[in-house]
Image 1 (cartoon, rainbow, N blue to C red):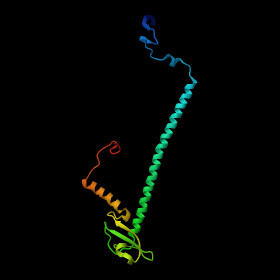
Image 2: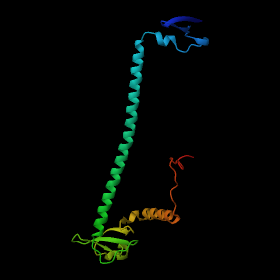
Image 3: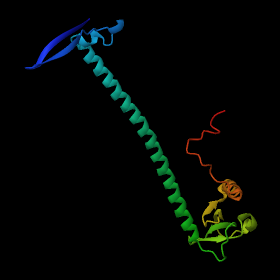
Amino acid sequence: MDRTVSLPSQPDKTTTVTLVESSSAPSGLELVSSYQTHRVGDPTDLVALAVQVQKGDDFIKANASNKLTVIADQIRYLQEQARKVLEEAKRDADLHHAACNIVKKPGNMYYLYQRQSGQKYFSIISPKEWGPSCPHTFVGAFKLQHDMSWTPIDEVEKRDAEIAIMDKLLSKQAALPPYTEPNFKGLSD
């Protein structure tokens, strides 16, 4: 319902203002819930809010804990890998310092023996070739790799297979695809 009222704004002038009555439900639709805007605070709402905040805190802690557990596992794995690298480097250094009266060539197998004095030396003659007349204690057999590392005889086959795969990849000159998204090929099916 509209009403028009005249109000004096200045001594010689009159301003006309139209008043419009407001309704909490214009056109029959309630825009704001009068229950939510006029009710007195309910103490259980504070408890529900505190419970919700606590649940959020619990989920955040659990999520952070899970992520930190994964990182801790990765750290342990990397520490183990570092330990292996250092052990292999020490073994390789020790083997390179063993006496040898021949020029060592990558790709060949060498046999390590130890004299009674404790001195270790390399030979190209295997214990089988020596037979029962082997003069010194056989310590182990090693293949000299092209990167000048040593592979124990029991790991040669595995290492040669790995190198063959790498050579195959390099000979194809296969470049990694330019994917920026995770690739889960081979993990499904």
